[in-house]
Length: 436
Image (cartoon, rainbow, N blue to C red; front, side):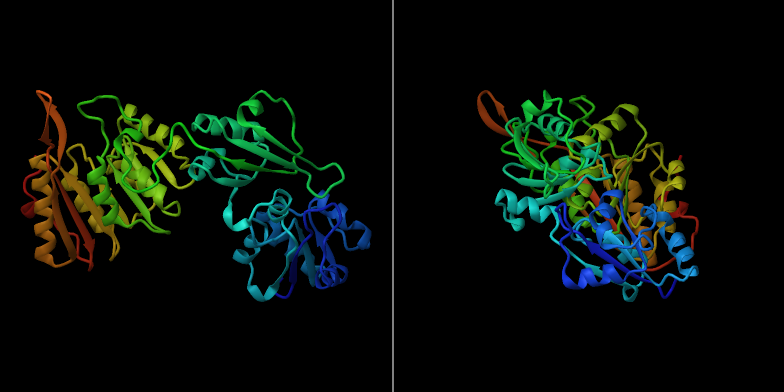
């Protein structure tokens, strides 16, 4: 299979293939053509029976199938795509799994481009979201006031389902334009307001794209880091409300600097405010929100749905450090709560961290601060970390006898430890103090 040539040919968003001269040439010369039933029907009049093979297999089987054909003497294969293979198309899979010298791409006008031209939209002024094979809750992450979103859909993201998500997010005046079977004789383009769609029993053609014009939400989500605390669903105890408050959360976000490829633990996640913001601003980071309390864990799940973080935010119910053995190794860790296990957590996590890994922790109680200061002293003594600590104290406005006053909240100490060298695992008890 090393010598097989694979050409991915886009057909365009029409009933008849839109092929350039080079695409036509490679299609006619191919020994084998693979595609869906619809795609093969578009080009069957151009091909011989010998060229058309069974339907494109599942991608995880494709390498095996191609190897079988190679052993039968096949040296050139065309895989049919809908429009632009490398824009939310099958082409990206081939780029990840085959050497570039084995591939050639022949794009046509994509369905997204066709929609934009049909509706007079500038492609650079719209957002494109694929929900094809993805949870519909991912839509929430893309919603904000006065946006136009082109949505690639499947049977789990029909216009009615999208309308329900929009209404649930407070976009009561949103409109959805449904573009069905573009380029076909029976194409249909129609605009609906979301409330009427909820009552509309119509079954839309599977080959459709939805264009959302959001309007304004009556339940707007924040647009910048440091979400106000009231945006989070909490456990309802006004005296506790187990979230890291906005002013402290901003400091934690700034220290952790989440980026693509990070694996981050949020231990003692409470209702999930740190996890939510870490993943909201960096969807490509994998964030594990670890919380043992059932009610707070339920809040994490509700916040996850509210903010549309359905891909890389992973709520985990359990107690650290025991539950950590089931999770991938992190490179960044936030400890917001430890249920009395902080010394053990610090020892274990520090030993596991690679050089460059980081632990950030917060403390309100003096006992927690004591353990963190002991760990800081140990790091300084060994010279194996870049350490930083700051104390954050704020005073919030209130009124007394009708006059403005400020009431000081409990100060929060923030510690950051970035591992700079490997050290052998030794007993830290003399440094950290008695754990009893």
